Amino acid sequence: MEVTMARKALIWSMILGLASLLVNHVDGDQLQKMQALKDSLARHDSISLAPSSLISPSPSPTSLLPSLKNPLVYHVTSYGADPTGKADSTEALLGAIADAFHGPSEGFLIEGITNLGGAQINLDGGNYLISRPLRLPAAGVGNLMIHGGTIRASDDFPTDGYLIDLSSASDKKIEANKDSSMNANKLSASSYNYEYITLKDLLLDSNYRGGGIAVINSLRTSIDNCYLTHFTTNGILVQSGHETYIRNSFLGQHITAGGDHGERKFSGTAINLIGNDNSVTDVVIFSASIGVMVSGQANLLSGVHCYNKATGFGGTGIYLRLPGLTQTRIVNSYLDYTGIVAEDPVQLHISNTFFLGDAYIVLKSINGVANGVNIVDNMFSGSNNGVEIVQLDQSKGPFKKIDQVIVDRNNVKGMNIKATVARLSVQGNGSSWTADFNKILLFPNLIRHVQYSLNTLGNIFPNHALRNVTKNRVVIEANEALPANVFVTVDQGNGS
Image (spheres, rainbow, N blue to C red):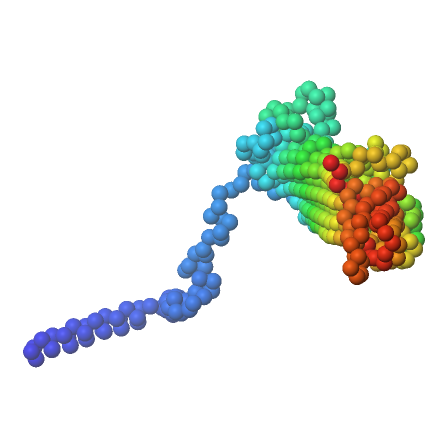
């Protein structure tokens, strides 16, 4: 046992001596390096602080990704666009758009519309001056976004143009240029020009020369968080196509917040819908002669605030110009000193909307048709000038075909209520009672349904009957004179 311990002690002594010899042969510089290595290994942040000669830096995340030969984001400043707005940037912006058009694609959306894969034209937060409309080289593409900056028309911009023009005018240009190297697959075989084009976070200044955005025969276009001003024709024109969604945007010919001294001279139309199945949601229109013009079917307006031009100055908040085929819903909106006009309304719904400043609704006869109209659960506020909340324009002839028209349950302050459903009570001592509904009923000389009850005191049980409903007057007669209260309810709206 003692021998074993002696041998172990001898071995340890030899090891320590050898270590001492090695340390003595290390020069000062090597010792410092070894100490630095030791310290770096002991620190949590050793990777960031270790000498580069000892530890290689970790590769960045981007270096691990494959290089993108065809990036889907096109920065207009890389094409020479001037973000200060001093120089004309038309060619630069069109160059970026053309490259996006020719960029990588994958399959199709609707038949004939090439999927650009979410390509983006990034305006880099700049202010760009252009002298002619921005158009795609041809129709037949989709899944593209233009966003993030300001575009302003130059003083020589065409007065009939639009800053951003999603139309098929470029098709003619391609046909004229037979030597074009355009990919044949991107020429539209679809009945639509474009699909799923998004215009977002843009300020478009038309400089009182033409319009802002034109969407022609396109499908599923989105206009989101945009500010359009200084237009003379249309802020946004939607013609044909389907499902253009305009939301969270502001439009005005003149930049004002109401009470503008030049309001009488406001012109143009903020949004012009000449197509079907579109939606305008959470939009403010602060100056224009007409806020929203609707000439297509099945459109929805929700959360729209119009104070574009007061009705007293000749303005209209929302004009529905599709006689006999309206199919429009206006809900949760705010008509601020400007109203709604509907020509020959058929399937029109207006509800939960606030009308301020004697703003009212006009049903305008073109062919004398009003069918399937609901004007219910709205609020009207006026200045006690005797303005009726719903009015008829029969200058081109009376309404003759009236069916399923309901104007009811609206609350009114400072204006005269009009309705198609009304209730009155008449008290008298005699054998005849007349309830005159002319001040309340919307349509003249039209009562389709009557309900009444006759209440008398005592033990008298008279015979009584409805005798007349002409000229919106209901006449109840009894077979003998007696004191009685008569309660009458009438309805104009329900036909056969």
